[in-house]
Length: 100
Image 1 (tube, rainbow, N blue to C red):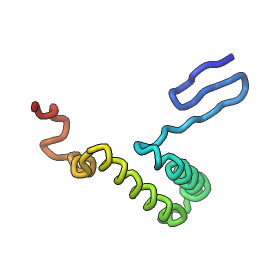
Image 2: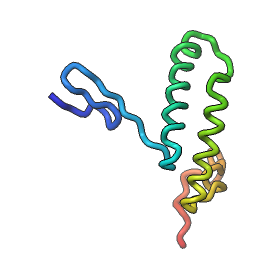
Image 3: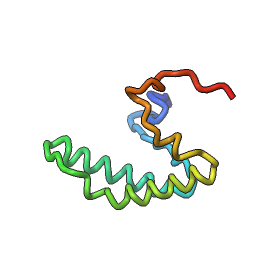
Image 4: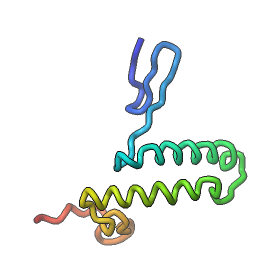
């Protein structure tokens, strides 16, 4: 029996397989998987157990992954200014996109 429970979870008989999305940049996908794994381990083993501290274990991996994503966005002509723009709580929030 094969059924999709959620887009990223696939149940096959008694096994559940969790898949992850690739990164925006093909070259960044391995870094993303490494960071996701590190973050999930930190979240489960520290944060959820009340050891609320900075995620220093994964900081270096995140910085490398973030740099890779920024390069990938730039190579795809996606403006970092638009991606990093804060709009929550401003008049621009929930506004229709501008007409070109």
